[in-house]
Amino acid sequence: MTAFVLVSGPFTDGRIWQEVADRLRESGAEVHPATLTGMGDRRDLAGPGTNLETHIEDLVRLIDRVDSGQVVIVGHDYGIHPVLGAADRRPDRVSRIVHLDAGLVLDGESVLDLLPDPAVRDRLVRGAEDGWRIVPPSLDDWPSLGSTEGVPADSLARLAEGAAPQPLGTFTQPLRLSGAVSGIPTSGILCTANGLSIAMVETVVRMGDPRFQPLTDPRVGFFELATGHWPMLSCPEELAGVLLRAAAGEGHRLTVAERQPEEHRRFLLDLPERPRERVEHVDLYLPDADGPRPAVVFVHGGPVPAEMRPRPRDWASFVGYGRYAAELGVVGVTLDHRLRDVGCYEQSAEDLAAAVELIRADPRVDAERVALWFFSAGGLLSADWLAAPPSWLRCVAATYAMLAPMPAWGLGESRFRPVAALPSAGGLPIVLTRVELDIPEIAATAEEFLTAAKDCGADVEVIDVPLGHHGFETTDHTEEARAAVEHAMRSVLGHLRG
Image (cartoon, rainbow, N blue to C red; front, side, top):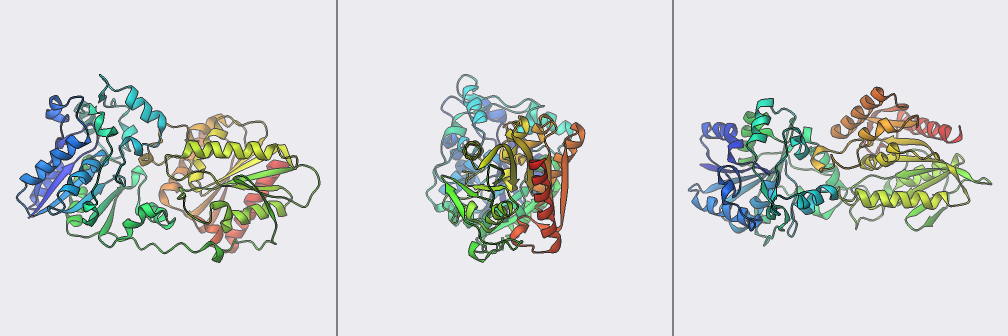
């Protein structure tokens, strides 16, 4: 018999699993929904010293009481931290770990370390009740923890009503692992309405970040649920079915093709070689022209691992865009910024601002005629410029760009939300290039952006690439793709020169 140990996210307790547990038991499984110290009917047991170690010990004791030889332990959201800690101490008892819409946590990382928005981190610590309890969100603020799509209103109300303060130490204490947990088979259940999908995982793995390479292990299987962050409330029957399949070792295995070496990639337009001038973290492609010329700054996406070589400004796509701009008589600018993970947007924004200041101070650049062109996850960096467009910013362009943060990224309260900034853009021209075969979660942000543009009357031109993929400039050498790049560049240059 399989025994499931179910561990929920912050502020919640074992009651959240009731419907899932009922369905699992109907299938013949043994089920143990965990209520950790300080949660639910155990809230009075918490104190200032309650921390992650307390919750790990809770689960170790629970595992030790389970008679079944096969224990599948499920961690949702915060719950994956104590789950990994307990499994690391009982690797001989745990047959599988299931990450339920939960991140990848490494040795030495705390919950706060993985929250990307420093303002949220600071507010949680400074606002802790009595200095050690994090107050649960109100009913209206509950979506800040993750998408509530699919959760019935009465269930969401009960969730908020039954929430207990989370001991601060469970968020601040780092997870310590011996390494034993790495030998346990793993499953990931991704909730697509919360911004996680197999396609996005494969994209991240393809970038070559060594932190994510273990996800290609054949013992790791993935599933998707078309729902928000709380599937135990929004689709309990489907979740129970997926958990049974995970316990049986099923799931999608990542078959990520190795990233094609940059030296083998080719920009979709044939352009002559052109020298570039490297200044700090910026490259300039200069046109054959006298006097100051307008400039287009091309902003890459990511996250891009710190050790990845070559860096984005040396990728064929950005070299191609830089050369193309210079060929058409304007200064093409590329840069490397520090988008190494989703917690690095502030550093990336600083790098972009510094690059813009540097090129506008260059006498070969017309400082009053600059366009910013954003790609992929770099699209979130456009929010600052849409929120308060300077007079010299003549156009913003975005290509297969993320224009609202993924709910799972924890940036919902940050300033990096182009959709929210759009009403402040006024008459700033925006050129948006969409690809038909984009990652669905990213494509959805473009549709949200266009809806917001319609509501506020923003000036957005849309260019579509039929059958185009994310990063199509070096993969889809079709006439339609070439025409789309040419069209987008003509539009941007028209706004620069107009």
